[in-house]
Length: 337
Image (tube, rainbow, N blue to C red; front, side, top):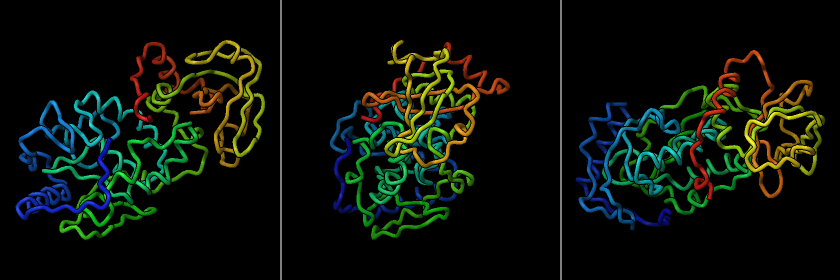
C-alpha cells in the first residue's frame, strides 16, 4: 500500500532539482529514453518504507504492457509505485485495467494508472496528485460499479499528495489540455503525455457493457475478466430499480465458459446491467438474433460485462471464439481487492 503523503512538504536540494528538471525537460521534448538513462536512486534498497530485494532500476516499457506502452515515455521505474517488483507481476496486474482504459471514462485514466504501474524513470518517485486521482475516480468508478467492481483500496485518493506538492497534475479537463499550477519549485506541467486524439475527444454515453468494439483482442480481454461466457438469445428486457434486466430465452444456450454457473442457472437465466435503466444499448434494439454474452456473478446477481450480436460474418468474432478454446487467461483477482 501507498504511504499517506497528504500534507507532506518535499525539501529537495538544488542539484537534485536541476537533475529532475532536466529529466522532465527531456521527456517534454519527446527525446529518446536513453538520454535520461543515467538517473539512479539511492544506493540502498530501502524505498518508501519498504525493503526491496532489488535496487530500483530503469527498464523499457515492453510492447505487451498494453496499459502503458503508449503513455508517452519509454522507460519506467521498477519496482513500481504499487510495490510490483518484477515485470511479469506488473504485466499481470496492469492487464486487467486495459478494458477500463478502452471505456474512455476520463481522458487522464492512462496518465493516472501508468504513473503507478509504470512510473516515469526519474531520480525519485513522482506520485499522481490527489486531484488527478479524484477526477479519474469520479468518472471511472461508476463504470467499474457497472461491472461489480468497487474503487480499489490501493487507489484511495487520500493516499496521494495535494496539488501544492510535487506530483503529477491533471493533463486534461474535458477535451482540452490543462495545466494545474502548484507551489513546488518544479512544475510538472512540462510533462507531455501523448494521447490518441480520438481517445481524448470521443466520449460515449452508452451503457458500458454495450460500448465494446467487436475486435478479437477486446473480446478476449472481456472473456478473461468474465466469470461466464454464453451464446444465447434474449427473450425480454425490463427496467428494474435503476437497472436493466435481461431475461434469457428458454432455447438452448451454448456455453463457451461455464465458470461459476451451474446447470440450473442456465434454465432461468437473468442478467442485469447495473445502473443501466436509461443508458442506450443498441444491441438490445432488436432481440431477434443470438448474442455473445459475458458476465460476472456479484452478490447473487449475474451482471453483464459485455454483449455483442452474434455476427456469423465477423472474422474478428470467429477468431476470438476459436481462440477461447485454448487460451489460458492470466489471474487478475488481486487487482480490485
